[in-house]
Image (cartoon, rainbow, N blue to C red; front, side, top):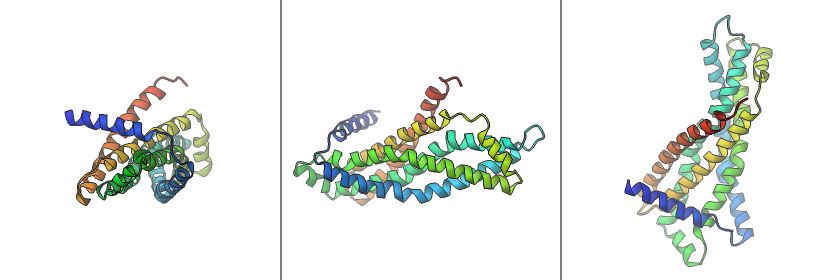
Length: 250
């Protein structure tokens, strides 16, 4: 319990250092562009693959679950659309990126910590927390929603092809995609992606920034970062769903 409270306190102390104005704009922009390559562009491939097959599997499963004269074929498109937008794209992708992006951030910063590179930055008068972590957080918060939009699009395409494979006509699937569409669902999904992006990068950076010892401890820190990021994502997934969807009447 005491250790958990200490970790929470250390996290907020670190975030206070992170949320400071960059000392040199040119250096910050260089780091920002570098993080776009490392965090976002390197994740596009896995986002496309996972989203496509998730969408296809959801459509096929719903076809067999709703295989009844009482449910028209367009129901497959409707269920696939809502499942991908509301849950699979933001939450499942957040958990997957917690493993991919989060472990990478922890390993990078943790290695710098145990090799005393962060200490060297501090000796030179550089705010190491802001220099290393702030670009990662901003890149994730700004560009994760774009990955979610991509995931939703690819997931629906996968659902369409999955539906075709079990005999759902394209016209019926498209009708289901359009039927009683609620645009706010997309907004809700993007809100979750922003929150999850902040959780992934800040929690992973915390465990890397406070790593100690050698390479083995960096590996342990990466594992902790993924585990705790995933747990916090699931908790906030429930909180956001309850606050946003339950409190709004469509």
